Image (tube, rainbow, N blue to C red; front, side):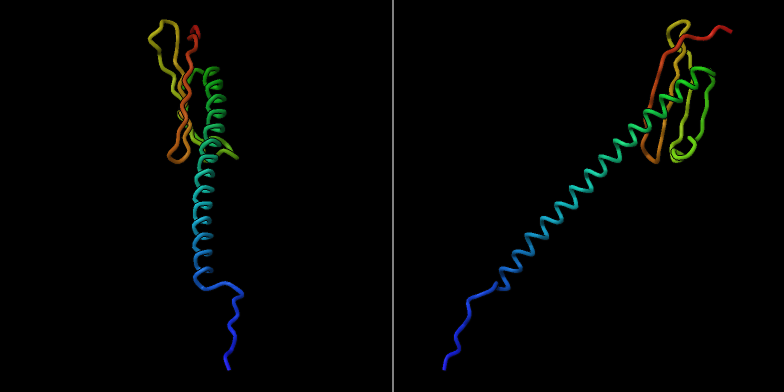
Length: 117
């Protein structure tokens, strides 16, 4: 007596091919997600760094003194270096502020009229 074979279900080869396709899609998805999170983090730094630099330029413009330091919390991982230099134009000073975090930096430069002393 012959036992009838059932033709229902999936073969091992079909399951392995499906898992390979799903695995490839997951790797691509994770890579894309990490890439876009890196871009979002960079945009966040540029935005926050630009706002902090702009505020520091306004502060240095009032005092006309160079400064170096760290921003207060919640931006304590951001550092700044503000310089005041004479520009090539008579009666004009150049204020330059560099904001850094780890290995990234944003630079703001502004020309202002020298204050009479």
